[in-house]
Amino acid sequence: MRVGPLKLKIQLICGDEIAMGPGKADVLEAIDREGSISAAGRALGMSYRRTWLLVDEMNRCFSEKVVETHQGGRHDRGAELTEPGRAVLAAYRALEKQAGRIARSPENSQLAAALRDQPLPAKSDV
Image (cartoon, rainbow, N blue to C red; front, side):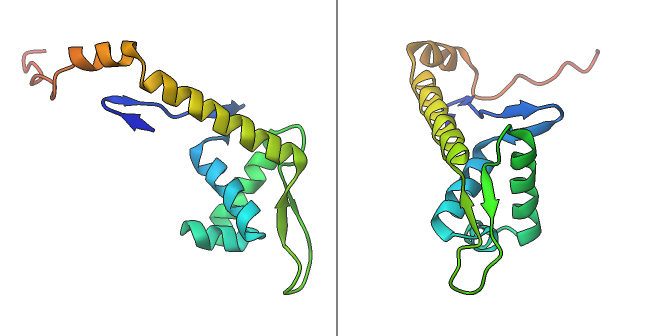
């Protein structure tokens, strides 16, 4: 989220991997809406493989799976959020809302007012 010169991006880190960020939250919402990893990927303009890798990374990072996959035919849903997955998504979206309040704070306005529109040219004699 970008508000003026302030850019806030909340990421939860697990070891060297990103357990949750804005894109992964979008993936969880798409899986919940579409009912499968492949349909979620299509809805987001992502390949199945990329979408599956993001789901796998989330499932490996959280103590309980956030997405459960199912074998099935045409009428069965292929993936769904688990209850822990729904809780993770809700908590992450709540953090994003809190970050939005920070972006609209007087302190952010004060910092934005102190910034130049563009940086000065770099000194060439360094």
